[in-house]
Image (tube, rainbow, N blue to C red; front, side, top):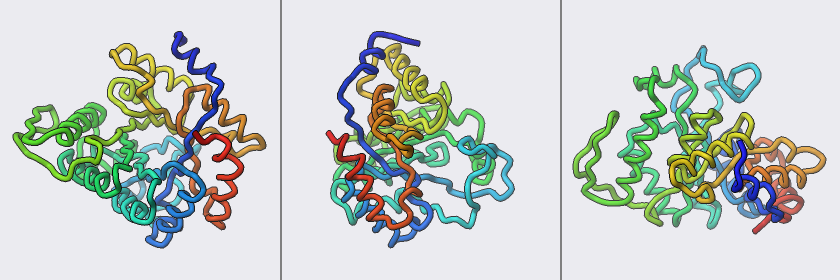
Length: 304
């Protein structure tokens, strides 16, 4: 799939990139002290944002396939702490000034949109508008079963919850009638600092790319053919009367950790990537020194 605007994106010569830390609320950084260490080190090194992972519960003996590992299983076990993303991000936000606070990815169909809209808006308001809300439909069926949430049609449920949250953020006395949620005339405060919170659609399927093209402020595929998924998202945006330039693209590039990280950044930029994800486990030892070196050697070269 090729179009004029896609070619133009791929021929841009300026290589400006944001850098983010993924899996931020894991390993030693899952504690209060670890969150503080990570936040301070990341901001000092020039990282733009930190992105959390989420599982409300960990069903032992699950049979669902984890899509990001060859053996189909999540690294670690239920004994490895995964703090609630918004609580953890509030801790990081309290010790930083500019670092953006992102969920990557929040399992939106496991939440009630009114409750979650309030929680996200509160964090955004208190942090001065620093929240990026990454959402996904989930892959762990047993987790949905434990929470007594239907597994089928979780994609449409996610889209409906997204629209409901945006309406609650945008006004008061809101009435919403949908397939999965209905409410009449509630108001919710606090409101997001800038009127809304950017919503990034996660996932590496065609359906996720199209969902992002239709309704996302951003798109974050963590697997698959990233350039192709970006193109599908952009084309879907055009087909739905949207400007693809209004969508922010986030992902990773394995070449970033090889001998020529600048080449990896350049290739990722040629796909139209705006933000490059760096797994936090690369900086679990000597965190301040490790992130500082990455900031000097990579981030500083590609700052806006």
